[in-house]
Amino acid sequence: MTTPHCFSSLESALCALFGEGIKVETASRISGGDINEVYGLTLTDGKCIFMKANKKENGSLFTAEAAGLDAIAQTKTIGTPQILGVGTDEERGGFSFLLLEFISGKSRSKNYWEDFARQLSEMHRAETAGLVSGGKYGFRCDNYIGRHSQVNTGYESWTGFFRDCRLEPQFRDAARYFDKEEWKRITRLLDRIDEILVEPEYPSLLHGDLWGGNVIVGNDGAAWLIDPAVYVGHAEADLAMTELFGGFPPIFYDAYKEAAPLQPGYERRRDVYNLYHLLNHLNLFGRMYLPEVKHTISRTL
Image 1 (cartoon, rainbow, N blue to C red):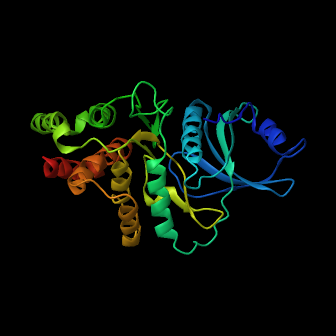
Image 2: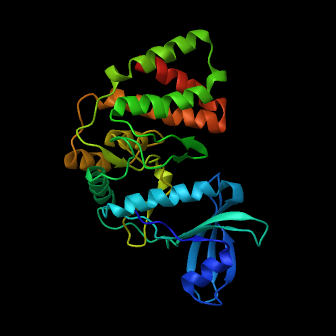
Image 3: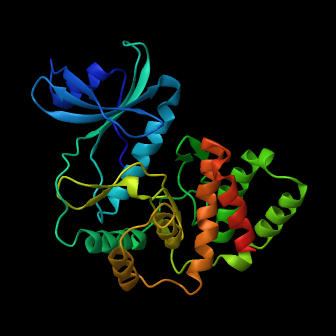
């Protein structure tokens, strides 16, 4: 694990990273994202870097994101932006920040989707020893899925981890949306998780929030991963998330399954994995996601 540099101000970060006297020449707001403010910073030496900013009390969002990016980068399988540093700036009204390599937006390389699928499967097969405390599944620290906290307590059982650390916390936070009869179905679903999910053939480092918006064209033209919510789990949970909001081209799935064949019954398990993300969206954005949550519960039982 590489610990990112932690700075007491943006000015001190720029000086340490790029040299004495280096400052921000221009800051351009970048659209996208509903949690942080995002900027492209052009420095006085001509370099460009990427900055996320939030209230100073939300700095743990950035330390968690940096830990996730570092875990992925350590597998040496797939691209991520270089982490430059994190910090809290008290001099300019108080804000937390994360500094990253700037992505220039090149065109996709040849065989972009097939290469991405193979690299993702390699990440899923990478060694996970040392990433979890007290078990095979989880992560060394808790983190976030969007703004929602994500519990990563170590478990020996994947199905137990997914029930206790993924579905149950989201259901608790969404309790107000369900009546007594619906809670009976929810309880039945949680009680049957061991019958629906399967233990993986090997533990995998997961991106954790792998939809299309968190895959970008990197500075080498290949697929890079951003905005992780990492933990160690079953690789098919990542694959399921890619199918939730539109999906990737068929060539991606064909290449992934060729590199890492799926265990039988994935299609049914996919709904349970994606129930976690639908619940998270329900808790973050409101009842527009409730019909799909209820439909998924009924379809799964």
